[in-house]
Image 1 (cartoon, rainbow, N blue to C red):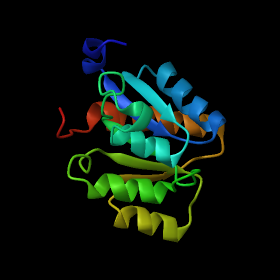
Image 2 (image 1 turned 180 degrees about the vertical axis):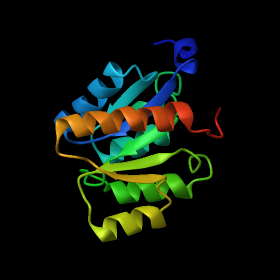
Image 3 (image 1 turned 90 degrees about the horizontal axis):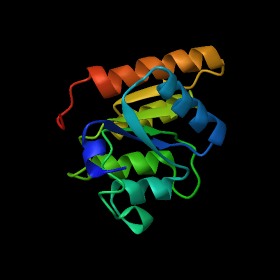
Length: 151
């Protein structure tokens, strides 16, 4: 995809190790015509590499900065809470909205996510219809309706 094409749309970084959940997110955004390009990584280290432009994600033209990050908490290599902490502690990335999208409804996970400045915390519904509806609302809110500093 060309840099010009990417500049006309919104970039979403999906950090999700469950392929079925990742596919549901992608399919839901496509079905509801939320204007975006989704980059999917399946572990916390890849998420950090993508956000901080290292390793295989060093090419900024190929891997543009995300306008929003959907972040699972239970990730291989680097835990989602640590990914969130590092993103929000860095002056260059802290303004990027990070939405926790996880199966955990544990009070300690919710509290720690907000301590680390998550922009939102959403528990994934197990029902596919509810999940799809949530993705539509989430996509419109964070990628279309919400006013962000990068616009």
